[in-house]
Length: 193
Image 1: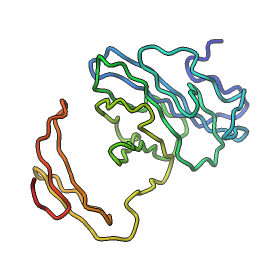
Image 2: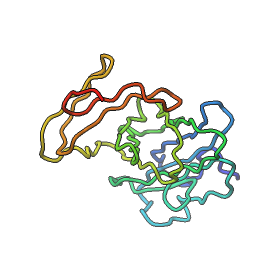
Image 3: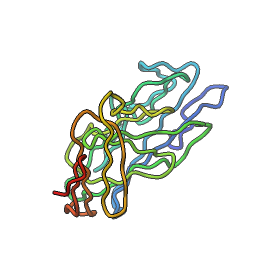
Image 4: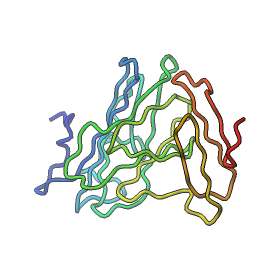
């Protein structure tokens, strides 16, 4: 079979799976990747649970070492690299969960470039292409907070939206429109720039 619909896992137990899509906001480009969790899968290459990306359209979404389907152990708790290869013509995209089977825990996308976590289980993540292929990672279950170090509390507000956190470094909140134009910038001390 072609195994295009995530039925690649040929085992007696029903695997826990999450299928992600990468879509350009203009609808021109689309790709998918599948991550599954199974008691017999390992973090290495498993011929029964992993499949390489066989072709690359103008966009490609994959995990690890160019895997279209990535089988992981049931107790997997690390970060998983998520790569997006994007064409130059379009620069606004969204990564979203399009199918989830027996997940039972949230899936967080970490944007390494922006140092930002997003709960994909709640909604998709829109971003502007920056040319960085390995910009994202995934975390399953409990979110790892990069700001959980000791430090001071910060609180910034832009246009009625308040953001709080803890960080030892100065924090700047920028609000941009979809074209990337800066609308407002506020630093961790509450001063507008």
